[in-house]
Image 1: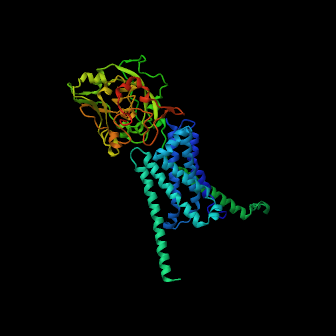
Image 2: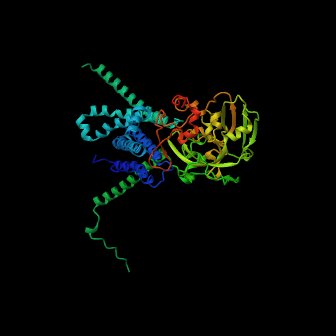
Image 3: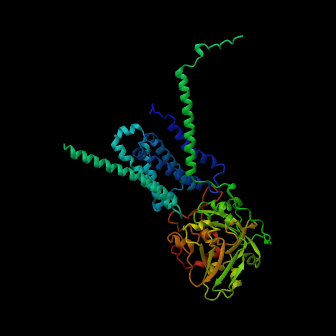
Length: 208
Length: 329
């Protein structure tokens, strides 16, 4: 990390990535978020959590398709930014919107599939955020770490479902995110199949 | 005289090459850092939600209502603080102009509420087609300060101007077969660009049972805050049924038809599990995706409990005696 050729990249991503959140924190109390500021903050944080999570999942496909290696350097930062927005989204909902009314929160999470899937996505992101450090990669061993972090796809898919169920009408925007996510997943699956075939072919050539 | 060559600075003051290169590198990186940070922030801003701002309101002010208005506090008026005009006219659901709350305020300028004719027909003895200005002149306008509870769990307090729907219905004389009143919004994608998208089954339709329509609370509104209805609030004529969720308050009405059968309504057609014909405000019947037990009054920070029939139970609960309101939501 120290000898990175782009030392500015991750700091810039953190600063640029957190600036919408900072804007909300400044504009909200000043009444600049419109008549329903809490709803505006809720929508903004939720949408950006999904945007950043999908962005983090584009890093590996970009390497596979375009051969770029720099996206791999920002994947962790993007993932942690997505997690930050997901937590902010949950806090706006639980604290500002629902006023920490535990009964209402419990009913929402257990009885309303729309909220259940959103909450499940957040819960899935927690172990990924915790194990995002180099130490955790070493502790788990890379293959296990990698398997664990495939949950990011599940979380993103749940996020898309949450978004689709959120809108009353016109699911165009959530479906765009769904389509992008499907494309990314297709690239990963395609690569996996190609590797498996290559391994099988190699095994056939050199029977051990 | 020959110029002396400029004295070289002592070597101690010459920036060592390594430092010089590091400075250049530092400056370059600082530039890249700033550029990337701005690009990332800008990209997220573009992908994110646009906020409503007062300056986003492009619809010109509709002007003062010139007819005299009875100003005295009526028996149905609430004395709760009114939601500011700014909020009432920039935070709207009117999908004919877009899905975001500020879309109607930004785009409803394409609607031409004048001239505007309204058809009143069906099971009536005096069917007629009448210009809305003439129709309004038949009645004296009243100010009614009502709570408005949206099905999305937010609410407002709005001073409407209008006349009771009952007064109009009495004038056109319903036949003995009339059991329901069906309302229709204008269908004109030129004036209502949102109708180009098949998001809902256009035109928007709503309905009331005849006894609900005749209830003195039920209002046909032509204005708010002493002014003509702005386009985004449903100019020139809209329905206000304060004990029902806001979507029952159909906007920009072109037809009022009395029927024998319960009319189909737009949201019920679109999502029958979520929106029923009655749509009475009911804290004990949750929407499938959220609770209806509480609401946020626009401008308030904390939620407040939602009242049965939006606080108008005394006036309307008798309309539903013996009905299972969980089934007829």
